[in-house]
Image (cartoon, rainbow, N blue to C red):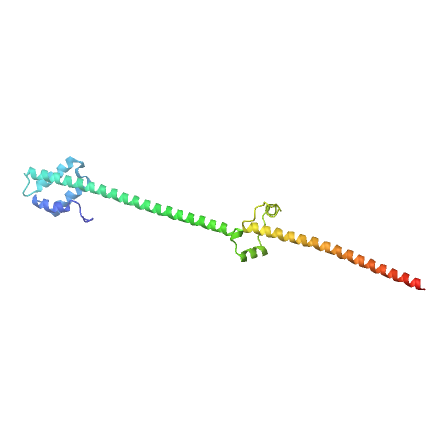
Length: 224
């Protein structure tokens, strides 16, 4: 039905002329009444029918015709109201379905984002493990490293054979830094030891030369 047309327009365009009434003159009375109150007030409907009956040019005394008219417009109103209720119910269901679909889509997007974030975190953790580093990255780590945490020296490179090997970039950098410090310390100890050895050797050489000069002097004295 056209949205601009009343649900009784089609029926009234046929029945009113059949009852001896002009559609353009009396149709608006009927549609206005059925829109505003309808059959909620039986007395008012009776008054409307009495008005139409008194105005009829051919069926003023036809009780059966007016009773049929009354029943017909009342039933058509009930059918219209049921249809409207069904339409509104279906509209509400459509809105609910659309809302659920949107919520489900948002949940799926949220879950997808969470899974992708978790996957990226796992990949980052795996990439920070020493066994997964490229040689170039290990070389850079050994050269530059990272700023050590407060307890890095206590946790890494403490000399225990069963200590856990470094797994992350930070742990590896700390281990490399400690290893470098140990090498420098070892080199320093070795340098001091070599210096002492060289000093002792020089002293021995000096004593040997002095002893050699003494022997030569004694030999010259004996020849005199």
